[in-house]
Length: 339
Image (cartoon, rainbow, N blue to C red; front, side, top):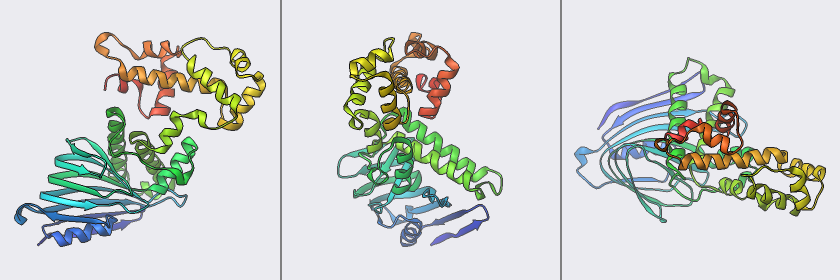
């Protein structure tokens, strides 16, 4: 039985909306496959009378520049279910459990989620899901969209983006993903009429979701950032290794250049050519990364402060440190310290 007919609306803001409730399992399959969950195979493992699907879906149109479209869904499944699901080749699904019981086996590991936990369903894996009265927020986004954003930010080849796991790399970044999703969803749903008609607004929303996903889940773009010595001439790699090793000390670029076996101008030219930054900017990036790790490990109860951690790594102006930190990590340093 379908308790309420689906309501579809595509309005002038380049957004499609769907809202439907059904107690018919076959109808539920059709609705979810129509949204793009094509290899989605739910089976009841409890009483049929308990089954219900309550679905609200928003489709944000693409920008015409390789970004999007993106789907944002709120799905409630009542009853006990077993679901087999494998995302399409270019489809990534990122979710957050709102309530209920949810267990995912992707062939590599089995994970039982608690409310608030984030997860990723990537192509190439057959996911076996067991759930009981679960509500989830899901984002459907193309791997090519994520690859384009990753290429712009990290330099990874657009077709070279791959995700290594379904679990976030840290609770902080999982929380950042959830906060980004809530902010974008609120903008899309509650913003002024006509807001998402503007292509720049849609591009910003899709870009924010992509950056948060790339930061939250392990992938090849993160690998590239974690191992910056894989590209460039040998002298550049030596200089970067020296800057990494001596980031906690006062550093002279003349000394670094001499120990790397080149002149200062040649070192600056190599950084500009191969990394599109100066040696000083790279050193600041390394120190910011160290400050981030220290904030993750610090305990405010022991008297740790953002200003003290910033000063330890050469950032004497807390306000400028906060601006630089937010630009890289997407949230203020105090959020990391008091997580």
